[in-house]
Length: 98
Image (cartoon, rainbow, N blue to C red; front, side, top):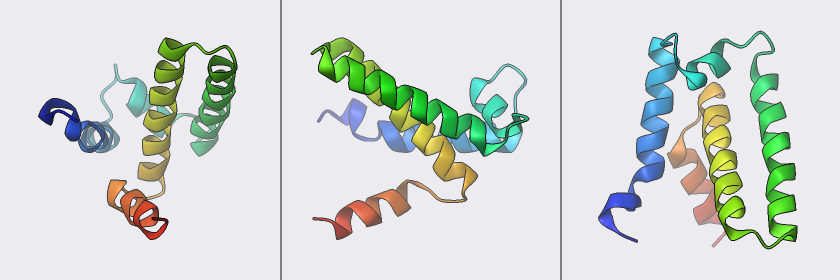
């Protein structure tokens, strides 16, 4: 893994936290934190993206598989932030499963 991509998840989570704190008007991320459906909006997106991921895998579409995987990771990080969790919580759980 190159130095440019090694910290991308941490950097993305930092942006998500910033959007949560500052709620810029033109931010999709901020709109998820203020959506009238609350966390259900993110949960629905996770369900939608999971279906799209499964279809991409079934079709052996590597480009779409990567795209949908990124969508799932992004929305998962938003959900963790909503639940006052962070990437370290995810890392700790993954480490327990080694």
